[in-house]
Image 1 (cartoon, rainbow, N blue to C red):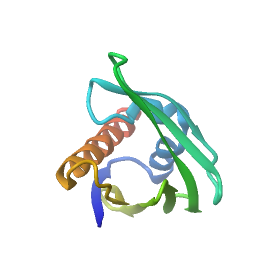
Image 2 (cartoon, one colour):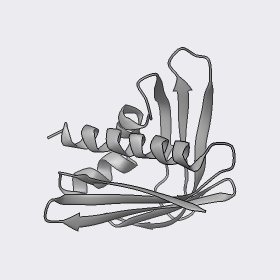
Image 3 (tube, rainbow, N blue to C red):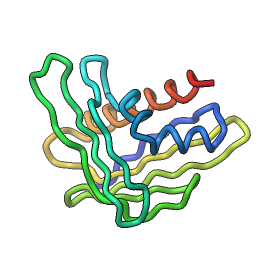
Image 4 (cartoon, one colour):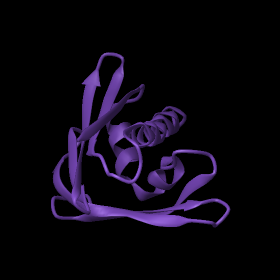
Length: 135
């Protein structure tokens, strides 16, 4: 089963793309709630390149690495990647009102579909706020 989340970012496509793919930006927006943060990120943005983000609870009680391999990269348009047995697709579409960022990903079986959708949507909303705040 695939889950989809999306948002519109009111910024130029180049700024949106850079913020989504640059480790210094990723650590600023990649969290689903205020009690979590991303402590480090690496990006080798090319087909076959690897990525990783270290996500941790701010109280130190739990953390994990979100890591995978890029399977297709079209600058300013598309990122596809695999992480474990799952896959995701991130589309960047320029529109008059801004850039629509749409993420579709394979669901996992540990958390409910609603929890996964809410978490990924919260991260995407943080991303939009981060980019729009950098004007």
